[in-house]
Length: 268
Image 1 (cartoon, rainbow, N blue to C red):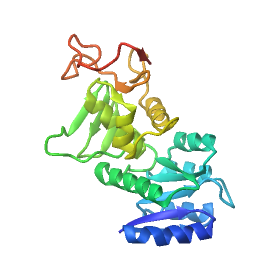
Image 2 (image 1 turned 135 degrees about the vertical axis):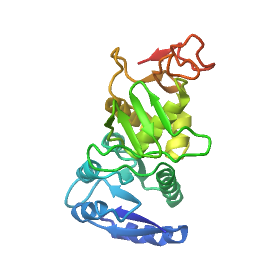
Image 3 (image 1 turned 180 degrees about the horizontal axis):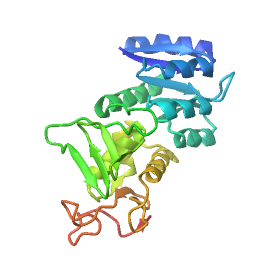
C-alpha cells in the first residue's frame, strides 16, 4: 500500500480523504502544521505528499522549498481554485502538480495515481542537492543511455548528467527530459507531454507543462551557441536541440530532418 503524507490544517478534510483513499490502496497519514509535515516528508517513509499552501505556522511554499532542497518526494500542492499565482509559484518551486480546492476526490485520486505510477516507472530522484535526477525504467527495446548535446541520461544508473555533472532535476523534469531526448529533435506536443508525464489531459489555460519545461531549460543551460537546449514550437510543443551528427534521424538541423518536426515556426 502506498503511503501518502497529507499536510493540511483542515482536520475534517484530512479525515474524509483518509477514509476515501484507503479502499484505493492509499494509506493517508495526516499532519496539521508545516513543521510537523516537513519532518515527516524528509523521513523517507512516504511515496508522495499532498501539501496545502495555507498552513497555520508557515507557508506551504516554504515547506516545499525545504523539501525540494533535500528530497525528490513527489509533491502535489493544494491551492485555492482562483489562486493561479499560487499554482505557478508552486510549480516553479518544484511541485509535481497541483489540485485546486474545492476538488472532486476522484480527480485527486487520478492525479495521485499518475504521480505514483510515474515514480514507479522512472524511480525517484536521489534528493539532496547535486545528487541528480530520477531515471526511467529500462524496457527491453529502449536504449540504456540517451545522450545529446552534453546531456546524458543513464537509466540503469538512475542519473541525469550535464557534461558529466549530476543534474538536480525533479521527477517531472526528468520525465520531460526523457521524452524530449527520445524524440531526437522532433517536436513533442504539449498534450503528449501532459499525458505522458502528468498522466492527464492538458486543461484550458493550464501552464503546468510550460512551467516545468521552463524550469528544466534553466537547469540544462544553453547550447554552445547560446541557444536554449529545449526549443519551443509555438502552439505545438517542445523539442531538444540535436545536432545532425548525434541524431539517428538527422535532428532539426540535419540534412534529412524527421518528417513532422514542425520547426518552421520556432521560438527559442
